[in-house]
Image (cartoon, rainbow, N blue to C red; front, side):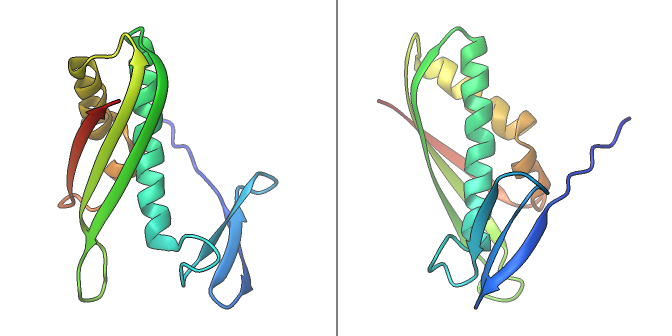
Length: 136
């Protein structure tokens, strides 16, 4: 099995603000105070939503659906004590597309969450992930 190693660099800017990304690649800002940019925990929710969203779009396209819109609203419940990790995440998918029906949408979402989404599968194994679906 080949191992893929990812590398990023993160540079402190000011207060709790950092900027980083792949060396010589695009960068993002992360703000520990959630003021100038999303903080680390919000960025984790964004990463989970983006990962599963990319999966869902790709799977639907393989099902011959022309995706016209995909919006994901992500929310997470955190522990009150340290470490304040997520104990559950809810992903609400809003999808629109030519040839899209509920069965195809649910199949794509289920495949993403249970098999393909690397971000979700990188989180704690006891993390509860739920989802909802609205066809627009």
